[in-house]
Length: 166
Image (cartoon, rainbow, N blue to C red; front, side, top):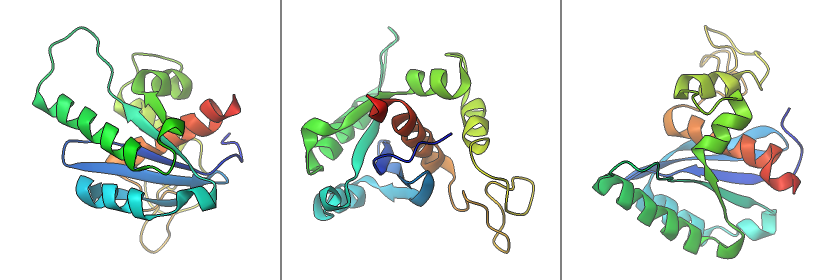
């Protein structure tokens, strides 16, 4: 169960655009995908400190395999997002492996397993095949949360349930 703790803004960074999710009192307050330049400007402009938000960013991890330009570009954006935050030293860097272990109890979990674990934490109150998401006419609590925003929500849940307990 998602704990009612510090509001969290979580990011799933990418090379040109990133997913974001604001989790407040266990509910998604905002979620989507934004161009990195726009997200950076928003982080710098908004006064998240007044609203009590914490920032968690999914961090890249190395497992000994060669990586390409995209990974380095993503890491560069992670640093820029952290620096733009009102309290850069308080930003939590969250590794995907930790999210998988927490949500799925397995380091071998795939994105589809993580997505299902996220869905399972929300009430199936909407319409359609996936009532947690729902439909336009019968939206669920995760209506509009898709792609990278769903990954950002997984980071937010992890941060709410694990990171901010300590």
